[in-house]
Structures are given as C-alpha cells and as structure tokens.
Length: 176
Image (cartoon, rainbow, N blue to C red; front, side):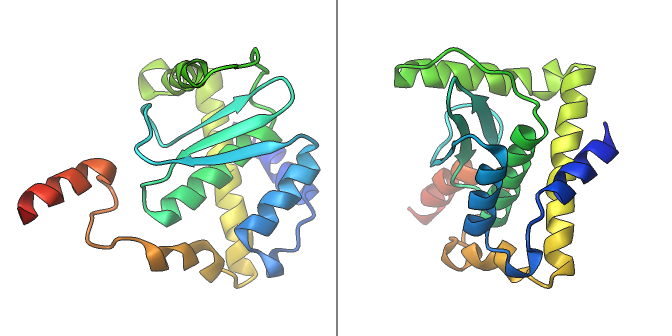
C-alpha cells in the first residue's frame, strides 16, 4: 500500500471539510476526477460483497448494496470513490444490457473477493480503505460527524445491520 499516494490524493482534493455533506463531497470529487460517476444503490444486491466499481468507456459506476446500514453504505461509497481517484480501475468494454452489467459486476466482485486477492488487488483495497479512513478523519476534525450518520434516522433499527436482507427474511418468519 502506498500511504503517501493516498494522503496526497486526499490533500489534492482541496475540499472544505467544515461544510461536509456527502452529496456536496460527491459532486466535488466528480469534478476533481474529471469523469462522470454514476452512483446507484441497489436493494438486495445480486453479487457478493457490498459494492462494486466499474470504469466504462466514458462513465464510471458505483453499485452499492442499499439495504445495509446507512453508515456502512456511506463508508462503501467513499471507499469506491477512492478506487477511482487512486486510479485503480482499468476501463472495460461498453455494457449494453442489464444482464451484461450484472455479469460484469459479478466478475469484478469475484476478482476483489478474499479468495482471489492478488498482492496488487490487496494493495488497492487497502489504499481505498485508507482513503475512506482519511476522509472520515477529516470530517471528524472538522466536527461534521453528524453528516456521516444523519441517514440513520430512516433506517429500520428492528433489523440487525450486519445480516442485511437475510435478517429481514428471518424476522418476517418470527413475526408470523
């Protein structure tokens, strides 16, 4: 992992952390990145893992599991933004159908799964995680931590956050 590269990337953003709101941060990073990033929450994510980043010909995509705890979802979004800003992903062929996108997402998800982690992929994952840590650290220093947790007001607290959609299915069985 190249810590200096990650630290330089966060500094280069020149973001005003005292005004942090995720939507504003996202717009700022897209502008800095110089390419559109399409951010798509997906309920009942069809691939393993929490999120997937895909760099296509002209647009970058982040697909994130929408039924996880909102704090985890936000962390995953920041982590995936880190992959783009740290230039981890190579472009892939243009995807024309939903089936092709799901196939591509599954391929990327498997590539980044624990079983298939090469030293390069492991380093990239550590760098993206360090990026998310540094962003969170800047938000904390700016006393904007509530901006990382406000989405939890609408979260269904009756469901354990670590079990996602499976807990919801189980809780329905218990209630019947």
